[in-house]
Length: 361
Image 1 (tube, one colour):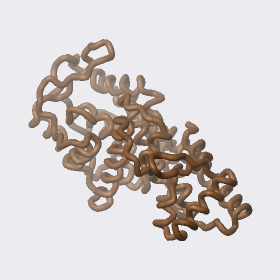
Image 2 (cartoon, one colour; image 1 turned 135 degrees about the horizontal axis):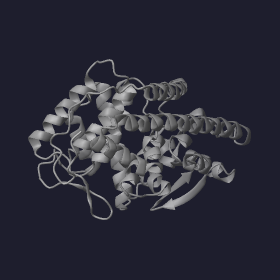
Image 3 (cartoon, helix red, strand yellow; image 1 turned 45 degrees about the vertical axis):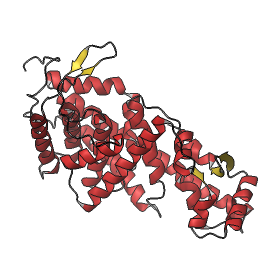
Image 4 (cartoon, one colour; image 1 turned 180 degrees about the horizontal axis):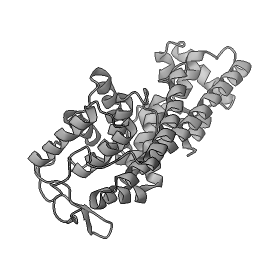
């Protein structure tokens, strides 16, 4: 393999699929493990009475973790408050995380309408994340640098070259072939990050594509998994393994990393989902015992959709008059189910036990 010049645009980035054996014994063994874990998670999600109930919380956690990889840091508290409160939060990091969640949600809806991952969809995703009209990178001189300022990689340059690489990637993703979908997912993620088609937002767009691909291939009907959580904890490995493919053609190491990510995050997501559903059952039982006149199934679901709730959510669900639902929330707080907080002119109520489960990583 020719030694890569890190300072020169990698316009010779090979097209997919790679011309080498990918399904080594190690890879096949790990593929079976990861597929099994993912199938267990998918089974639990699809068997929930209301599979979409926790989706907002899960997507926000993924958005928070993915943004953290790019050093965009916010707290769970700020994040959930800003989503629920009428008051506008001006924290730039919180805004970016919410834009990521919006991009992920829009992507899921697009995949449901048209099961196809395209270059145009990638552009729509990055524009939603960045809240601008950015398209494919046209300005030369893009390079990725280390913290010390050393160039570690120079992606392909020139709009024509980038579009050619993306067209090949699009064809590869959507083609019917014999490559196991999880191995294929690892290949497509490397390729997207190596093409680096945008001036900014490539990492976050690439991680959204992972979730969309899991849905596209029916491996995870509801993309309720925090893949970025694994990358944060193994960030150095993530970038090292990417570089090993580019510089040494080490696809096995990269594929194994990605399969371990799927396996690990599926197991954790399953555990967390069980904890949330068990907590929901427990709180349902407690409310029925302590506040039988307040309890309804719809009320408990509202308390578990997001950690924060407010009176308007109960009004919108037609659970009673503004005065009645206001009293419900006061009674729930008096019994210790919720903690209230004034944000701007309104009062928000925190399901603190749910927040605790969501924060346990």
